[in-house]
Length: 157
Image 1: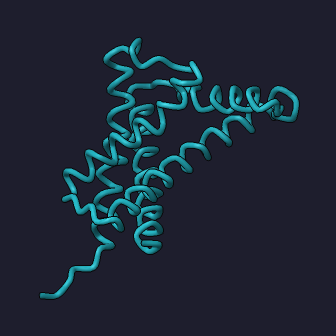
Image 2 (image 1 turned 45 degrees about the vertical axis):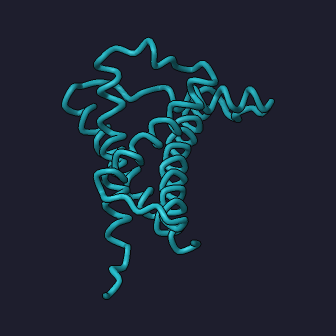
Image 3 (image 1 turned 120 degrees about the vertical axis):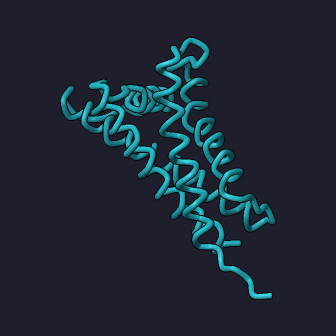
């Protein structure tokens, strides 16, 4: 089980890299700015916990940006670890089903907390907003599933 979880975490980290790459390609192609949602999440979580982000406004914003990016990597790695745990528990999807499941899990893990914190409301997103969110998460899901599948030893018959 531990081996499956660790391989899942590594696959999730690879998926997070794919998600970031897809996001950066979208930003470069469409000329859109980076989302401020991760920084807003960090700020709201810190406020909720009664903790402040230290520094003047420039350093505070830099810390929020860094922490927001780290939260994304942690989320991607954790979803991958959960994917590996499910495999260790007997779930054996092909890459298509696994990719769809990992994509959905990543969407929920990324957007769920921000929706609960009322930082965003997916019900109010435009089609372009949904596409900007779905495409990178689908890249995440399929890279995670394919990377994990590549680590599974084929048993000899």
